[in-house]
Length: 317
Figure 1 (cartoon, helix red, strand yellow):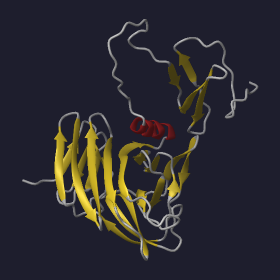
Figure 2: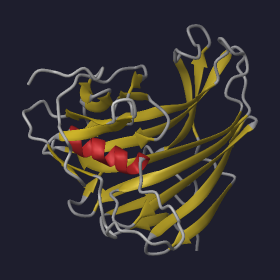
Figure 3: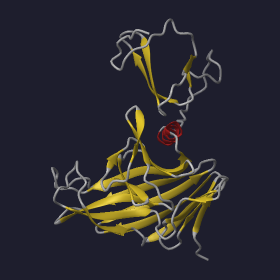
Figure 4: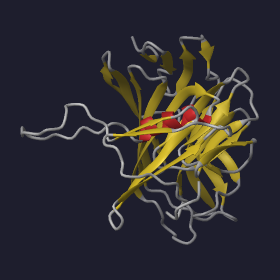
Protein backbone atom coordinates (compact mmCIF):
# COMPACT_ATOMS: atom_id res chain seq x y z
CA UNK A 1 0.00 0.00 0.00
CA UNK A 2 1.16 3.53 -0.80
CA UNK A 3 0.40 5.38 2.42
CA UNK A 4 1.47 8.81 3.62
CA UNK A 5 5.15 9.16 4.47
CA UNK A 6 5.56 9.39 8.25
CA UNK A 7 8.87 10.51 9.78
CA UNK A 8 8.81 10.09 13.57
CA UNK A 9 11.23 10.17 16.48
CA UNK A 10 10.81 10.45 20.25
CA UNK A 11 9.96 14.18 20.06
CA UNK A 12 7.94 14.90 16.91
CA UNK A 13 5.83 13.31 14.19
CA UNK A 14 5.89 14.64 10.62
CA UNK A 15 3.43 13.46 7.96
CA UNK A 16 3.98 13.99 4.23
CA UNK A 17 1.19 13.50 1.69
CA UNK A 18 1.60 10.25 -0.26
CA UNK A 19 0.72 11.97 -3.58
CA UNK A 20 2.36 15.40 -3.36
CA UNK A 21 5.24 14.55 -1.03
CA UNK A 22 4.50 17.81 0.85
CA UNK A 23 4.44 18.24 4.63
CA UNK A 24 0.84 18.22 5.94
CA UNK A 25 1.36 17.67 9.69
CA UNK A 26 4.09 18.49 12.22
CA UNK A 27 3.20 17.58 15.81
CA UNK A 28 5.14 18.17 19.01
CA UNK A 29 4.64 14.85 20.84
CA UNK A 30 5.41 16.43 24.24
CA UNK A 31 2.55 18.96 24.04
CA UNK A 32 0.35 17.52 21.28
CA UNK A 33 0.52 20.82 19.39
CA UNK A 34 -0.04 20.72 15.61
CA UNK A 35 2.01 23.37 13.79
CA UNK A 36 0.92 22.80 10.15
CA UNK A 37 -2.45 23.41 8.49
CA UNK A 38 -3.16 20.22 6.47
CA UNK A 39 -5.20 22.20 3.93
CA UNK A 40 -2.10 24.31 3.13
CA UNK A 41 0.91 21.96 2.89
CA UNK A 42 4.54 23.03 3.15
CA UNK A 43 6.11 22.99 -0.31
CA UNK A 44 8.41 24.53 -2.85
CA UNK A 45 6.56 27.13 -4.88
CA UNK A 46 7.32 29.09 -8.04
CA UNK A 47 6.22 32.71 -7.82
CA UNK A 48 5.54 34.66 -11.00
CA UNK A 49 6.70 38.22 -10.35
CA UNK A 50 6.15 41.48 -12.16
CA UNK A 51 9.29 42.34 -14.11
CA UNK A 52 9.03 46.05 -13.39
CA UNK A 53 10.86 46.75 -10.14
CA UNK A 54 12.56 43.35 -10.01
CA UNK A 55 16.36 43.08 -9.97
CA UNK A 56 19.11 41.02 -8.37
CA UNK A 57 18.61 43.17 -5.24
CA UNK A 58 14.83 43.67 -5.30
CA UNK A 59 12.10 41.04 -5.09
CA UNK A 60 9.26 42.24 -7.32
CA UNK A 61 5.50 42.26 -6.95
CA UNK A 62 3.97 38.79 -6.65
CA UNK A 63 1.48 37.96 -9.43
CA UNK A 64 0.88 34.20 -9.10
CA UNK A 65 2.00 31.30 -6.91
CA UNK A 66 2.32 27.69 -8.13
CA UNK A 67 2.99 25.18 -5.31
CA UNK A 68 5.02 22.15 -6.34
CA UNK A 69 2.51 19.39 -5.54
CA UNK A 70 2.87 17.11 -8.55
CA UNK A 71 6.10 15.14 -8.18
CA UNK A 72 7.62 13.08 -10.97
CA UNK A 73 8.46 10.35 -8.46
CA UNK A 74 9.06 9.78 -4.74
CA UNK A 75 11.80 7.49 -3.44
CA UNK A 76 12.20 6.39 0.17
CA UNK A 77 15.86 6.48 1.17
CA UNK A 78 16.13 5.37 4.79
CA UNK A 79 13.91 4.48 7.71
CA UNK A 80 16.17 3.52 10.63
CA UNK A 81 16.18 4.62 14.26
CA UNK A 82 18.82 7.32 13.75
CA UNK A 83 17.59 8.91 10.52
CA UNK A 84 14.52 8.73 8.29
CA UNK A 85 14.18 10.37 4.89
CA UNK A 86 12.79 10.24 1.35
CA UNK A 87 13.26 12.24 -1.85
CA UNK A 88 10.57 13.80 -4.05
CA UNK A 89 11.44 15.09 -7.53
CA UNK A 90 9.49 17.92 -9.17
CA UNK A 91 9.66 19.65 -12.55
CA UNK A 92 8.71 23.20 -13.54
CA UNK A 93 9.44 24.64 -16.96
CA UNK A 94 12.94 23.54 -17.95
CA UNK A 95 14.01 22.97 -14.34
CA UNK A 96 13.94 20.07 -11.91
CA UNK A 97 14.00 20.11 -8.12
CA UNK A 98 14.74 17.33 -5.66
CA UNK A 99 13.50 17.79 -2.09
CA UNK A 100 14.76 15.45 0.63
CA UNK A 101 13.08 15.80 4.05
CA UNK A 102 15.02 14.16 6.87
CA UNK A 103 14.27 13.52 10.54
CA UNK A 104 17.17 12.77 12.90
CA UNK A 105 16.83 11.15 16.31
CA UNK A 106 16.74 13.62 19.19
CA UNK A 107 15.82 16.66 17.07
CA UNK A 108 12.63 18.73 17.11
CA UNK A 109 13.29 19.70 13.52
CA UNK A 110 12.75 18.42 10.00
CA UNK A 111 15.79 18.96 7.81
CA UNK A 112 15.19 19.73 4.12
CA UNK A 113 17.80 19.39 1.40
CA UNK A 114 16.77 21.14 -1.82
CA UNK A 115 18.77 20.34 -4.95
CA UNK A 116 17.53 22.48 -7.85
CA UNK A 117 18.79 22.24 -11.42
CA UNK A 118 17.54 25.68 -12.50
CA UNK A 119 17.33 26.57 -16.20
CA UNK A 120 14.75 29.38 -16.26
CA UNK A 121 15.01 32.81 -17.87
CA UNK A 122 12.78 35.87 -17.52
CA UNK A 123 10.52 37.26 -20.22
CA UNK A 124 7.55 39.52 -19.50
CA UNK A 125 7.50 38.10 -15.96
CA UNK A 126 10.15 36.80 -13.56
CA UNK A 127 10.08 33.34 -11.90
CA UNK A 128 11.13 33.08 -8.25
CA UNK A 129 11.64 29.77 -6.44
CA UNK A 130 10.63 29.90 -2.76
CA UNK A 131 10.18 27.47 0.13
CA UNK A 132 6.75 28.23 1.59
CA UNK A 133 5.57 27.24 5.10
CA UNK A 134 1.90 27.88 5.96
CA UNK A 135 1.19 27.11 9.62
CA UNK A 136 -1.84 26.32 11.76
CA UNK A 137 -1.91 29.32 14.10
CA UNK A 138 -2.45 33.06 13.81
CA UNK A 139 0.36 35.47 14.64
CA UNK A 140 1.56 38.97 13.88
CA UNK A 141 4.92 38.49 15.58
CA UNK A 142 8.06 37.15 13.90
CA UNK A 143 11.58 36.98 15.32
CA UNK A 144 14.61 37.17 12.99
CA UNK A 145 18.31 37.28 13.79
CA UNK A 146 20.35 40.30 12.72
CA UNK A 147 24.03 41.16 13.27
CA UNK A 148 24.76 40.93 17.02
CA UNK A 149 21.14 40.40 18.01
CA UNK A 150 17.56 39.64 17.03
CA UNK A 151 14.50 41.77 16.19
CA UNK A 152 10.73 41.26 16.28
CA UNK A 153 8.97 42.15 13.03
CA UNK A 154 5.40 42.57 11.91
CA UNK A 155 3.89 40.81 8.86
CA UNK A 156 5.00 42.40 5.59
CA UNK A 157 4.35 41.75 1.88
CA UNK A 158 8.03 41.86 1.01
CA UNK A 159 11.21 40.00 1.87
CA UNK A 160 13.02 40.96 5.08
CA UNK A 161 16.62 40.01 5.97
CA UNK A 162 17.54 37.39 8.54
CA UNK A 163 21.02 35.97 9.00
CA UNK A 164 20.00 32.39 9.83
CA UNK A 165 16.33 32.10 10.78
CA UNK A 166 12.80 33.46 10.86
CA UNK A 167 10.54 32.30 13.71
CA UNK A 168 6.75 32.60 13.93
CA UNK A 169 5.78 33.19 17.57
CA UNK A 170 2.72 31.53 19.15
CA UNK A 171 0.70 32.94 22.06
CA UNK A 172 1.87 30.10 24.33
CA UNK A 173 5.53 31.13 23.94
CA UNK A 174 6.50 28.38 21.52
CA UNK A 175 7.76 29.12 18.03
CA UNK A 176 8.04 27.53 14.61
CA UNK A 177 11.38 28.48 13.08
CA UNK A 178 12.71 28.22 9.55
CA UNK A 179 16.51 27.95 9.53
CA UNK A 180 18.65 28.17 6.38
CA UNK A 181 22.33 27.66 5.65
CA UNK A 182 22.75 30.16 2.80
CA UNK A 183 19.55 32.20 2.15
CA UNK A 184 18.45 35.33 3.96
CA UNK A 185 15.32 36.82 2.33
CA UNK A 186 12.35 35.81 4.52
CA UNK A 187 8.72 36.73 3.83
CA UNK A 188 6.22 36.45 6.68
CA UNK A 189 2.53 37.32 6.43
CA UNK A 190 -1.00 35.85 6.50
CA UNK A 191 -0.12 32.90 8.77
CA UNK A 192 2.78 31.63 6.72
CA UNK A 193 6.44 32.36 6.16
CA UNK A 194 8.99 31.34 3.59
CA UNK A 195 12.39 32.08 2.12
CA UNK A 196 13.46 33.07 -1.41
CA UNK A 197 15.78 30.49 -2.97
CA UNK A 198 16.38 31.48 -6.63
CA UNK A 199 15.55 34.87 -8.14
CA UNK A 200 15.65 34.79 -11.96
CA UNK A 201 15.94 38.54 -12.46
CA UNK A 202 17.22 40.19 -15.67
CA UNK A 203 19.03 43.10 -14.03
CA UNK A 204 21.98 43.40 -14.17
CA UNK A 205 22.62 39.84 -15.46
CA UNK A 206 20.08 38.67 -18.07
CA UNK A 207 20.76 34.98 -17.32
CA UNK A 208 21.52 34.69 -13.59
CA UNK A 209 21.55 31.68 -11.30
CA UNK A 210 21.33 29.03 -14.01
CA UNK A 211 22.73 25.68 -12.89
CA UNK A 212 22.70 23.56 -9.77
CA UNK A 213 21.70 25.04 -6.41
CA UNK A 214 21.91 23.10 -3.14
CA UNK A 215 20.20 24.63 -0.11
CA UNK A 216 19.83 23.10 3.35
CA UNK A 217 17.02 24.19 5.66
CA UNK A 218 15.37 23.08 8.88
CA UNK A 219 11.82 23.56 10.16
CA UNK A 220 12.18 23.51 13.94
CA UNK A 221 9.84 23.64 16.92
CA UNK A 222 11.45 26.06 19.33
CA UNK A 223 10.75 28.90 21.82
CA UNK A 224 10.14 32.64 21.81
CA UNK A 225 13.72 33.13 23.00
CA UNK A 226 16.49 34.65 20.89
CA UNK A 227 19.23 32.68 22.63
CA UNK A 228 17.47 29.33 22.13
CA UNK A 229 16.79 30.16 18.48
CA UNK A 230 20.39 31.28 17.93
CA UNK A 231 21.72 28.04 19.39
CA UNK A 232 19.25 26.02 17.31
CA UNK A 233 20.40 27.76 14.13
CA UNK A 234 24.07 27.36 14.98
CA UNK A 235 23.74 23.68 15.77
CA UNK A 236 22.19 23.23 12.32
CA UNK A 237 24.65 25.42 10.39
CA UNK A 238 27.81 24.61 12.36
CA UNK A 239 27.53 20.95 13.24
CA UNK A 240 30.35 18.95 14.79
CA UNK A 241 33.04 18.04 12.26
CA UNK A 242 34.85 14.71 12.48
CA UNK A 243 38.52 14.84 11.43
CA UNK A 244 40.39 11.57 10.97
CA UNK A 245 44.00 11.13 12.02
CA UNK A 246 46.60 8.41 12.46
CA UNK A 247 48.03 6.92 15.60
CA UNK A 248 50.67 9.11 17.25
CA UNK A 249 51.96 9.93 20.74
CA UNK A 250 50.75 13.00 22.60
CA UNK A 251 50.56 14.57 26.03
CA UNK A 252 47.11 16.16 25.92
CA UNK A 253 44.14 14.43 27.59
CA UNK A 254 41.60 12.57 25.44
CA UNK A 255 38.97 15.20 26.19
CA UNK A 256 39.96 18.88 26.23
CA UNK A 257 38.15 22.08 25.29
CA UNK A 258 40.14 25.16 24.35
CA UNK A 259 37.36 27.51 25.41
CA UNK A 260 34.19 26.99 27.47
CA UNK A 261 31.51 29.71 27.30
CA UNK A 262 28.76 29.91 29.93
CA UNK A 263 25.89 32.44 30.02
CA UNK A 264 22.15 32.72 30.66
CA UNK A 265 21.14 34.82 27.65
CA UNK A 266 24.36 35.69 25.80
CA UNK A 267 25.89 33.81 22.86
CA UNK A 268 29.42 33.48 21.55
CA UNK A 269 29.90 35.32 18.26
CA UNK A 270 33.51 34.60 17.25
CA UNK A 271 36.99 33.66 18.43
CA UNK A 272 39.69 35.56 16.53
CA UNK A 273 43.42 34.88 17.00
CA UNK A 274 45.72 37.82 16.25
CA UNK A 275 49.24 36.81 15.22
CA UNK A 276 50.70 40.33 15.37
CA UNK A 277 49.98 40.78 19.08
CA UNK A 278 49.66 37.15 20.16
CA UNK A 279 46.18 37.76 21.51
CA UNK A 280 42.80 36.12 21.08
CA UNK A 281 39.66 38.24 20.67
CA UNK A 282 36.50 36.60 22.01
CA UNK A 283 33.31 38.32 20.89
CA UNK A 284 29.88 37.71 22.40
CA UNK A 285 26.59 39.54 22.77
CA UNK A 286 23.42 39.40 24.86
CA UNK A 287 20.27 38.31 22.99
CA UNK A 288 17.29 39.06 25.25
CA UNK A 289 17.81 42.68 26.32
CA UNK A 290 18.74 42.04 29.95
CA UNK A 291 21.79 41.99 32.21
CA UNK A 292 23.79 38.78 32.02
CA UNK A 293 26.93 37.25 33.49
CA UNK A 294 29.36 35.62 31.07
CA UNK A 295 31.99 33.10 32.20
CA UNK A 296 34.93 32.18 29.96
CA UNK A 297 37.04 29.15 30.86
CA UNK A 298 40.25 28.55 28.93
CA UNK A 299 42.31 25.37 28.78
CA UNK A 300 45.26 27.36 30.18
CA UNK A 301 45.22 30.47 32.31
CA UNK A 302 45.69 33.62 30.19
CA UNK A 303 48.50 36.06 30.94
CA UNK A 304 45.95 38.89 31.06
CA UNK A 305 42.47 39.84 29.92
CA UNK A 306 41.15 43.24 28.83
CA UNK A 307 37.94 44.60 27.31
CA UNK A 308 38.19 45.86 23.72
CA UNK A 309 35.78 47.39 21.22
CA UNK A 310 34.92 45.93 17.80
CA UNK A 311 38.09 47.50 16.38
CA UNK A 312 40.29 45.79 18.98
CA UNK A 313 40.96 49.01 20.88
CA UNK A 314 41.28 48.54 24.64
CA UNK A 315 38.40 49.95 26.67
CA UNK A 316 38.46 51.37 30.17
CA UNK A 317 36.64 49.12 32.65
